[in-house]
Length: 181
Length: 216
Figure 1 (spheres, rainbow over the protein chains, first blue to last red):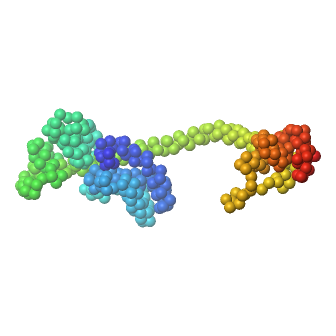
Figure 2: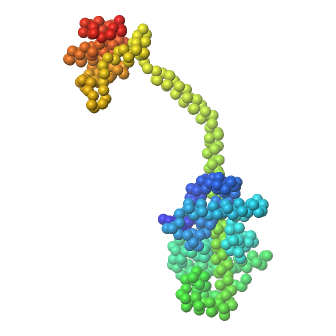
Figure 3: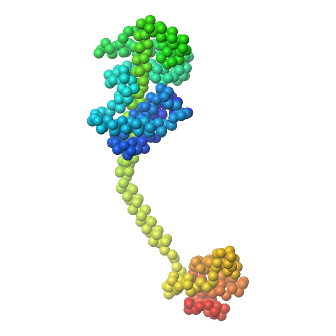
């Protein structure tokens, strides 16, 4: 099974495997090559895995043509350069803003801290199986048939109907958050 | 935020539109409807938000997995270090014992055991190669030493002072081939392996008169 499929089917295990395999060497390489601190190198490494995952889910990379190590090291190199450029110009805050920075670049309308918090809170409140259905269908690009199989529904129509109900529930969650604010 | 107005069918249509799964004509129809139907447009914008939030929440989950993975990595590293640190005394004792055993091994096993009496030590340790090896052997194919296979084997064992092995072979050479050099070597081998009297008896025999009287 190729790594993109592994990420889609069991992201927890696949991410942990990738982390365990590349963490030591990649972080040491970043520290030696770009003279950055260990905590900075860890941030860069973690962001590189997030970008690897995001690119795989959005269909920007394919298992057949992309090697995990080459991709990770390539992204890590670019992010390390970015970090070095930033360090020249401004003093970075101590907090870890790597995911937020990435989302702000990728999704200018949604990548603010408030938007991130609301998205995470709303989907957490929605809970499973709705959260999984929404993530699988709208982000991980699974078909209705794949979701039906993964979550054990009777057929694709049942899943489609369940997704519709989930969308309505999520909307009411958003609504209640807006009302609170 | 307005409640979802579109029916399940239209929501699925919008999903396909967002994912680019509609035909050209279906796309154009949907675009027309989005321009004229306010409710459909509101639901379309809502679905775009859901897609964006699905991505954000998924990446947030990935971030959490990576934070946990880092904790596990650090703990594993700490675990290995603490095991090494907590057991350093044990490793030190093992290292000292091992060094001691190695020293004793080299001292006792590495020392060659000798059977000949002390008075012959000088002959066997310093003068043997130059004065007590009287034959010549050649390794090159073009040269021949005139020795038989039995002679070569017995003489070589004698040359490297493997007297326990050389003595019986040399005795056999003397008894069967009347090889006087073998007799001489046999006498020296007997002394070399501690049979001094027997060796002396051999070395006083007339057949070995032509060879050096180094051992008396």
